[in-house]
Length: 426
View (cartoon, helix red, strand yellow):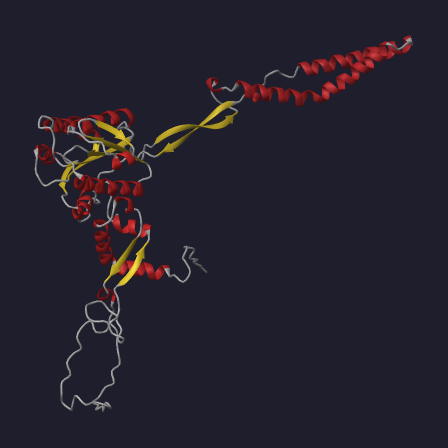
């Protein structure tokens, strides 16, 4: 007999099964509501739940009702306005006073508001990141040949001489000698005391009779103690090391953001929205991943998350400085034999005109050979020199993509298009 016990945590007077069925049934409406919530939500509020409103017409279900049947005639008392055969006009909308719509308030009637429920943080993130994944994520080393790392695992009784632990071996040898020779040393001590007393004996005949046997016994005990080896092979202890497999699907994401003077507050907000989506997406789906934040104007600098989003420093625009810094960090800290490298860049496309060609060359020669995937998002409509150079490179490279997002409502579709699962519809 099989018994199934549901141990999922549920609050009082809540049904997990009904809630899950409701979320599945109205998945499309919830997804559209989440998209609308993202458009009007600030960056700091991205990781919170959301109040979702579904129109009552979308959650209504067909029902069967039993009518009175037949043909009936009724007389309403106090009727001084209508006679038999008159048609009564339909009441105007909004007169109920309890539903949505317009009209004057009334002391009668009833209605029904739109259905409102709260999505938890986990449910919001689940809908928000549905069907997303880093494209082309591959293990650098094949699964059949995993990487291993050695770790200390105590001591063992066999090993190579270079792993011999001298202190632990000598400690074992001293303990063994003490354990094996304790009885013999106690017997020897007692025999030596008797021998000393016998030598002081005044009677010559007693000494002559017992002295040789006692001296032989003392000599045998001393020889027995001397035969105990100072260091025995069983005393040797070696440092033990075990090989532990380490995960090979490690990834690092480089986030490059333009903070030059041409990036006004609205454009910076669009770039911040894109990167906060990317940050939440990576931290949700990949535990073994590093994120490197690089902000640039005429010079590039690696910063932490707080400075990346909230620093007020600005200046001119030299995009290649960020690409050069990304290459230096990748080659220094993230070798391609161990890490899968990804990059994402957000800018308004405005760049020093002599620098855009260099950016394309840097991407083609150094950055893209290191990266599994690199995405560029332009937060301005104008196709300036940087966009032209990047568009030419995107047409030739399979691991490089360019997109535009000039409104907050376009950030989410662009993000999903760039990071949708392989084979999934856009």
